[in-house]
Amino acid sequence: MDQIGFVALLIFAIILSFAFSYQQHRAYVGAIREIADQHDRNGVLVVSGRGKGFLRGCVVILAVDSTTRRILEARTMQGSTVLARFRRARFLEGDLKGAVGQATSKHMVTALEQATAQFRETARSTRSCSARTVTPEGTPA
Image 1 (tube, one colour):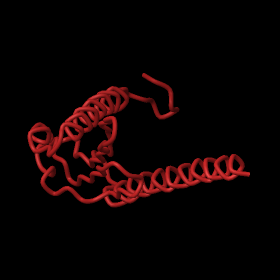
Image 2: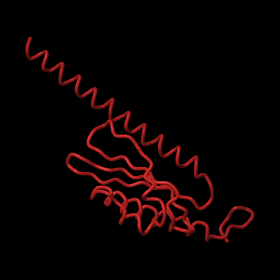
Image 3: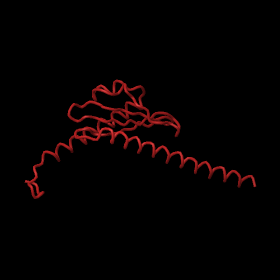
């Protein structure tokens, strides 16, 4: 009977872990949607990055104006438990180049570098798509 109780406890812990992970994923998706809705206009890109450690980590979501390369809004989630939540990080808002220097942890530095790389790649692909000329029939010129 002792082994059955231990197995039941393990199964319960795994199910609880999945539930908390799913809840955290939904919080991430909700934060992305909220920022995207608030900054829904031409030239603003929403990017994210993560910095993982053995016990702790950091996720960063940035709304960046692609013409001025300024961070309009930044949110971070850092911590070691599934109970961590996204919080506004006003100290990161401003020039995109200076954001890495404002980081408060090495995991945040990694997350900001990843988000910056994603911004550069997305901005590059957006420019190349908009530079194409298209005829009224919808075919490339």
